[in-house]
Figure 1: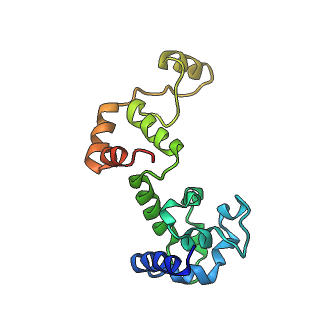
Figure 2: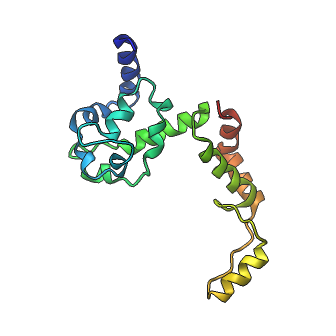
Length: 165
Protein backbone atom coordinates (compact mmCIF):
# COMPACT_ATOMS: atom_id res chain seq x y z
CA UNK A 1 0.00 0.00 0.00
CA UNK A 2 1.43 3.38 -0.97
CA UNK A 3 2.56 5.53 1.96
CA UNK A 4 0.47 8.45 0.65
CA UNK A 5 -2.78 6.46 1.09
CA UNK A 6 -1.78 5.37 4.59
CA UNK A 7 -1.15 8.97 5.62
CA UNK A 8 -4.48 10.14 4.20
CA UNK A 9 -6.35 7.45 6.13
CA UNK A 10 -4.49 8.26 9.34
CA UNK A 11 -5.09 12.00 8.81
CA UNK A 12 -8.81 11.34 8.39
CA UNK A 13 -8.90 9.40 11.70
CA UNK A 14 -6.81 12.03 13.51
CA UNK A 15 -9.02 14.82 12.23
CA UNK A 16 -12.08 13.14 13.73
CA UNK A 17 -10.27 12.00 16.91
CA UNK A 18 -7.12 14.09 17.45
CA UNK A 19 -6.20 12.56 20.83
CA UNK A 20 -5.67 9.17 19.18
CA UNK A 21 -2.24 10.33 18.01
CA UNK A 22 -1.12 9.83 21.61
CA UNK A 23 -2.33 6.19 21.47
CA UNK A 24 -0.11 5.53 18.49
CA UNK A 25 2.93 6.58 20.52
CA UNK A 26 2.17 5.44 24.07
CA UNK A 27 0.99 1.80 24.29
CA UNK A 28 0.54 1.92 28.10
CA UNK A 29 -2.90 0.38 27.66
CA UNK A 30 -1.29 -2.77 26.28
CA UNK A 31 -0.56 -3.69 29.91
CA UNK A 32 -4.26 -4.22 30.67
CA UNK A 33 -6.07 -4.60 27.33
CA UNK A 34 -7.68 -8.08 27.01
CA UNK A 35 -7.49 -7.81 23.20
CA UNK A 36 -3.68 -7.81 23.40
CA UNK A 37 -3.89 -11.51 24.22
CA UNK A 38 -5.93 -12.29 21.11
CA UNK A 39 -4.60 -12.89 17.61
CA UNK A 40 -0.90 -12.49 18.37
CA UNK A 41 -0.89 -8.92 19.62
CA UNK A 42 1.96 -7.99 21.92
CA UNK A 43 3.05 -5.08 24.07
CA UNK A 44 4.89 -3.66 21.08
CA UNK A 45 2.39 -4.59 18.36
CA UNK A 46 -0.72 -3.62 20.29
CA UNK A 47 -4.38 -3.98 19.50
CA UNK A 48 -4.84 -0.19 19.65
CA UNK A 49 -1.93 0.37 17.29
CA UNK A 50 -3.30 -2.26 14.90
CA UNK A 51 -6.75 -0.66 14.82
CA UNK A 52 -5.73 2.99 14.65
CA UNK A 53 -2.90 2.45 12.15
CA UNK A 54 -5.09 0.58 9.65
CA UNK A 55 -5.62 2.24 6.29
CA UNK A 56 -9.38 1.99 6.77
CA UNK A 57 -9.91 1.37 10.50
CA UNK A 58 -13.65 0.83 10.09
CA UNK A 59 -12.91 -2.16 7.84
CA UNK A 60 -10.38 -3.66 10.26
CA UNK A 61 -12.09 -6.76 11.72
CA UNK A 62 -10.00 -6.35 14.87
CA UNK A 63 -12.18 -3.46 16.06
CA UNK A 64 -14.68 -6.12 17.13
CA UNK A 65 -12.15 -7.57 19.60
CA UNK A 66 -12.68 -4.57 21.88
CA UNK A 67 -15.07 -5.60 24.65
CA UNK A 68 -15.54 -2.01 25.87
CA UNK A 69 -14.15 -2.82 29.31
CA UNK A 70 -12.62 0.69 29.53
CA UNK A 71 -9.43 -0.67 31.14
CA UNK A 72 -7.45 1.29 28.55
CA UNK A 73 -9.08 4.50 29.76
CA UNK A 74 -8.46 3.68 33.41
CA UNK A 75 -4.72 3.26 32.87
CA UNK A 76 -4.21 5.95 30.22
CA UNK A 77 -1.79 8.59 31.53
CA UNK A 78 -3.07 11.08 28.91
CA UNK A 79 -6.82 10.72 29.51
CA UNK A 80 -7.44 9.55 25.96
CA UNK A 81 -10.68 7.62 25.49
CA UNK A 82 -9.89 4.99 22.85
CA UNK A 83 -13.12 3.10 23.55
CA UNK A 84 -15.13 6.09 22.27
CA UNK A 85 -13.18 5.99 19.01
CA UNK A 86 -13.48 2.21 18.69
CA UNK A 87 -17.22 2.41 19.33
CA UNK A 88 -17.50 5.12 16.66
CA UNK A 89 -15.54 2.90 14.26
CA UNK A 90 -17.82 -0.06 15.07
CA UNK A 91 -20.85 2.12 14.41
CA UNK A 92 -19.40 3.23 11.07
CA UNK A 93 -18.46 -0.35 10.19
CA UNK A 94 -21.93 -1.59 11.11
CA UNK A 95 -23.65 1.03 9.01
CA UNK A 96 -21.39 0.38 6.00
CA UNK A 97 -21.91 -3.39 6.21
CA UNK A 98 -18.48 -4.36 7.55
CA UNK A 99 -19.71 -5.79 10.86
CA UNK A 100 -19.30 -9.54 11.35
CA UNK A 101 -22.42 -11.50 10.49
CA UNK A 102 -22.61 -12.77 14.09
CA UNK A 103 -23.15 -9.19 15.34
CA UNK A 104 -25.99 -8.62 12.88
CA UNK A 105 -27.52 -12.00 13.75
CA UNK A 106 -27.49 -11.22 17.47
CA UNK A 107 -29.16 -7.85 16.92
CA UNK A 108 -31.75 -9.50 14.69
CA UNK A 109 -32.31 -12.14 17.40
CA UNK A 110 -33.04 -9.38 19.95
CA UNK A 111 -35.33 -7.53 17.53
CA UNK A 112 -37.37 -10.64 16.71
CA UNK A 113 -37.47 -12.48 20.06
CA UNK A 114 -36.40 -10.00 22.71
CA UNK A 115 -33.54 -12.28 23.75
CA UNK A 116 -29.86 -12.12 22.77
CA UNK A 117 -29.71 -15.90 22.55
CA UNK A 118 -31.91 -18.38 20.72
CA UNK A 119 -34.60 -20.14 22.72
CA UNK A 120 -35.21 -23.51 21.14
CA UNK A 121 -37.82 -24.82 23.58
CA UNK A 122 -41.10 -23.19 24.51
CA UNK A 123 -40.96 -20.57 27.23
CA UNK A 124 -43.37 -22.74 29.27
CA UNK A 125 -40.92 -25.67 29.21
CA UNK A 126 -37.97 -23.43 30.03
CA UNK A 127 -39.81 -21.87 32.96
CA UNK A 128 -40.78 -25.30 34.36
CA UNK A 129 -37.11 -26.30 34.23
CA UNK A 130 -36.07 -23.00 35.80
CA UNK A 131 -38.65 -23.52 38.55
CA UNK A 132 -37.22 -26.97 39.26
CA UNK A 133 -33.83 -25.33 39.69
CA UNK A 134 -35.19 -22.59 41.94
CA UNK A 135 -34.72 -19.89 39.31
CA UNK A 136 -37.12 -17.09 38.45
CA UNK A 137 -39.11 -17.61 35.25
CA UNK A 138 -38.17 -15.80 32.05
CA UNK A 139 -40.73 -13.24 31.04
CA UNK A 140 -42.31 -12.80 27.64
CA UNK A 141 -40.45 -10.02 25.88
CA UNK A 142 -42.37 -7.12 24.44
CA UNK A 143 -40.89 -7.42 20.96
CA UNK A 144 -43.08 -4.67 19.53
CA UNK A 145 -41.68 -2.22 22.11
CA UNK A 146 -38.13 -3.33 21.29
CA UNK A 147 -38.82 -2.77 17.58
CA UNK A 148 -40.29 0.66 18.36
CA UNK A 149 -37.11 1.58 20.28
CA UNK A 150 -34.96 0.25 17.41
CA UNK A 151 -36.92 2.45 15.01
CA UNK A 152 -36.69 5.59 17.13
CA UNK A 153 -32.97 5.17 17.86
CA UNK A 154 -32.13 4.51 14.21
CA UNK A 155 -30.99 0.92 14.78
CA UNK A 156 -33.61 -0.46 12.42
CA UNK A 157 -32.44 1.89 9.63
CA UNK A 158 -28.79 1.01 10.32
CA UNK A 159 -29.64 -2.68 10.05
CA UNK A 160 -31.23 -2.01 6.68
CA UNK A 161 -28.42 0.24 5.36
CA UNK A 162 -25.67 -2.00 6.64
CA UNK A 163 -26.69 -5.28 5.03
CA UNK A 164 -23.46 -7.31 5.04
CA UNK A 165 -21.19 -6.57 2.10
